[in-house]
Image (cartoon, rainbow, N blue to C red; front, top):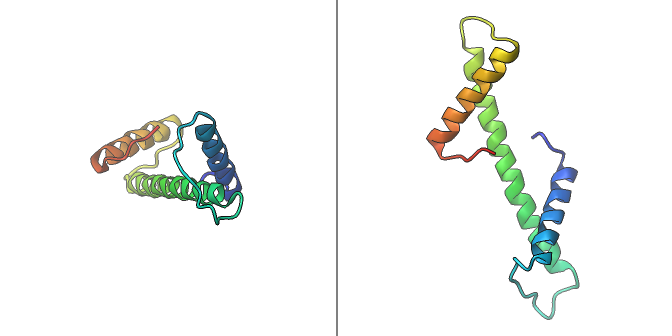
Amino acid sequence: MRLSEDKVRRIAERLHDELQQRQMLDYRDPPSSKRGAGRARRVKQIYDFLVADLQKEAELDAEVEKILASYSREIKGTEYDIMFRKHKDEIARKRGIVLW
């Protein structure tokens, strides 16, 4: 994974807070719950989603690297970057993965 767990957690927290500030979250915490427990649970769900998405991309990258390593000649530099992106886009499209 390209990002550390701490960075992903901070992204999840900021995303949650931004969505809450824009009133794009609709939730009600149970009256018996601890203060902040609902936020922590929602941040954890966002975090889990982000981690799963990053893992999918890491698996995709590993598959593309495997394909490029199978070429009969060694690919370097800019050509490697172009071929990597081409293969990654093609595999993602076939699997219905949206890349940003």
